[in-house]
Amino acid sequence: MILENNLKESASQNFREKGNIPFSLTLPKIITAFLWLLFTGNLVYMMYFFPNMKEWYQGTFFRINGFTILIWTTVTFFGALVGSYAGNYLNGFRYHTRFILRSLGFTLSVMSFVMSDHVILFLLSWLLMGFFMSRLIGIDSSWGDAREASRFTQRYFFTGSFFLSSGVLLLAFESGKFTVSGLVSSLADLPQYIVLIAALCIITAAIVQSAIYPFHRWLLSAMTAPTPASALMHAGFVNGAGILLALFSTFLFASNTLDVLFIIGGLTAIIAQFTKLLQVNIKQKLACSTIAQMGFMIMQCGLGFFNAAVVHLILHGFYKAYLFLSSGDEIAHTTPQKPPQISIKPIQAVVVLLFGFLGAVLFTLLTGKGTALDSSIFLTLIVAITVGQATYNIVKQQSLSIFQKITLPALLFLAGIGIYALLYNGVTALMADMPMVAVPLPLSVIQIVFGVVFLIGFFIMKLGIYRRIPWLYVKLLNLSQPYKKSILLYK
Image 1 (cartoon, rainbow, N blue to C red):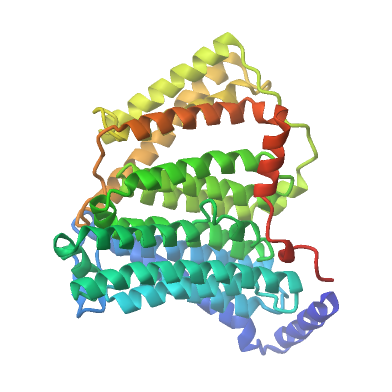
Image 2: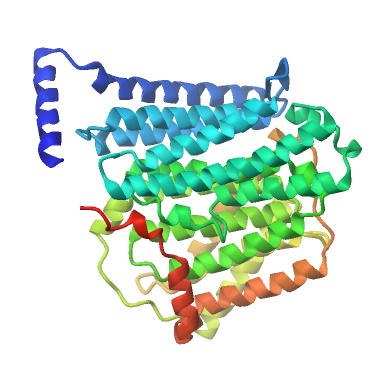
């Protein structure tokens, strides 16, 4: 392969010297420029008409509203970013053009998915998202491990498409409506058992695509994909569940299945955070991190805050794209180290608790969430934990002075929570015409009990107690293994 790539690069150089650049070399640049242009157009349109985004329909086929433009802006940005990065990273790679074309196909399929109103177009777009992503995972068809990973992931994607099709078509045939908007408007006329079955099918499709336990193994097996494809997958594809659940939020409320989402998401977040600590491969660590973040996103849907889940998927996309695209530099500067021992002095604990509390208060003031005894308390709790953890990482830095350890957390959480609150309020405004995307639930016994379990699991993880329980360590290690045929079986 190295010889073949060198020959191709040499031929490309000869073409450049003669002033004749092959179309196969210019096509990736054209597509990337097109995606940047598309992103700029979406961003300008969204900013110009915000917050009064008009909703319009093209017959029964398409529907475009503020939410559509928001997702278009997000996915075109990641598509353009990955295309630009791949221009250098995959330079000389014989499948570079194929990669760009499949990335474009994936980007367009996501755009089609969020604007499709007719159920056939909606389901076809979802299927195409999985098809293009599996092809990106197996982009090098001559590599046996990549072929097996592509086939393995495709089985999961087809399974998700089957459940989504079953749920949506069940609703369509029962109601006689074959548009997504029509299904939502006819909800009151549908039998409860039909709504329940359809909701469970939609939930299954969502958790398969977001690699939620027990459907997580496909994401761990997708490491054969080039790094730009991994960035696109973790920044865009796995987040599709949040979009899907937001579109069908009314059915999830009507079927009383939100507690199912809350529990499944919470368990996944805890387990994936545990398994992340056991990984030695940087991409496997990032995969476990993505699974954990998808668990948090599903939890937010289970709390009735689908708008918060959309904010989460956008922020996670930016964060995870950066981590994947900078993973090479991370590997180059990393040396093997023993797991850090968790220890904290009393004064440090006070600082961590104080800033965690202040972060929660600031979030409440900026968003209005957490002021009532309902499920919004859990959003505030997650913010408090995040701020507390960031504060802990700062106060443990030996290179910082006492003044810096006091001022840095305040500056960081002011900026971080301020940006989050701004994005949260903006996304909420863009989703204003979507029913029941921000409806807090009354506190239930299930939520309280599982909230306690979640906190216990979090502290067991952070304190490293799991390392002293051999059977748990082995169980978690086995849970985080990829499909056996996707690694080291082919020369």
